[in-house]
Length: 121
Image (tube, one colour):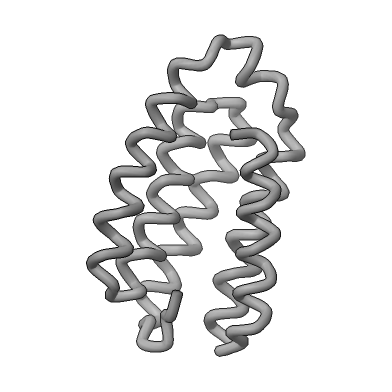
């Protein structure tokens, strides 16, 4: 994913999405956390200016969200708060790497993020 043309306003929106996710985590509101997480990723994908990526991930997120929200409550709560906080921290690391134009670090953090997310999903 390339986000070289990302503006400061777009960075602020990404940071806003991570703040929103952290608030949901702190409130133990899994539905709000899911929404904020999706919002972060949608923003990031849209800033790539890659319409194919956006369309593909929109359909994947819909499927993921349906699975997440239909999970039995005990399945969802098995993931502790620190897991969500680590994923949100990875979001922040991606933002910083893109802002610093450090593609290598962005790719590395994103790879870790995907691996850690796949453990739960």
